[in-house]
Image 1 (tube, one colour):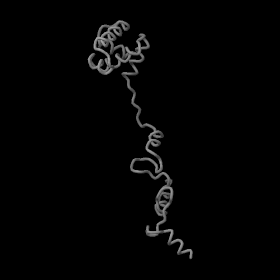
Image 2 (cartoon, rainbow, N blue to C red; image 1 turned 45 degrees about the horizontal axis):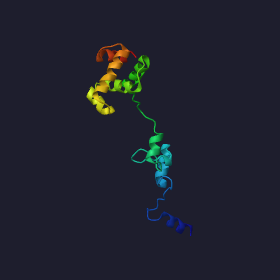
Image 3 (cartoon, rainbow, N blue to C red; image 1 turned 90 degrees about the horizontal axis):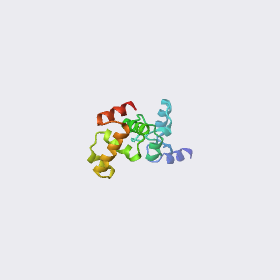
Image 4 (tube, helix red, strand yellow; image 1 turned 90 degrees about the vertical axis):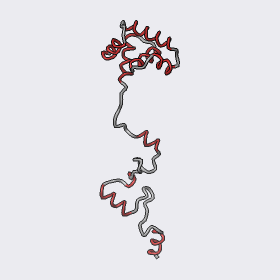
Amino acid sequence: MLEAQEGADRGKDGGASRDDESGASDEEGSALDELGEDKGAIRHAEGRPRGESFAEAEASRKPDVVFIDTVSHRAKRLAQQIGLSARELEVLEEFARGRSAASIAEKLFISTNTVKTHLRRIYEKAGIHSRRELLGMMEEA
């Protein structure tokens, strides 16, 4: 009677019973145990544990590399030193990246003349006369 029940539990998978949590057979589970791995830690092809959504996996993932926007960081430090407005800071960041007044105007939804006015005020506040001097100040900031 016990053998009949076990046969019914095995079903069509050829005698290997399934573990409900990981989907691994008992044989696979024992192989994982020998390797010292947890059955629940079996990972999908995407690299996340089974049962964990993509959003949960991304939220819990620690970044391997952290990128720092040095232009933005230096522009903010310089803006604090010379007292730039928020809009002047935006113009400064784009200008320091090598963008023209026309492309800055397009990106920030302002006129080209407004960009030129912001740049003139940045130069006045910094006491400089060229982009090269501005970039030099950013390096020092």
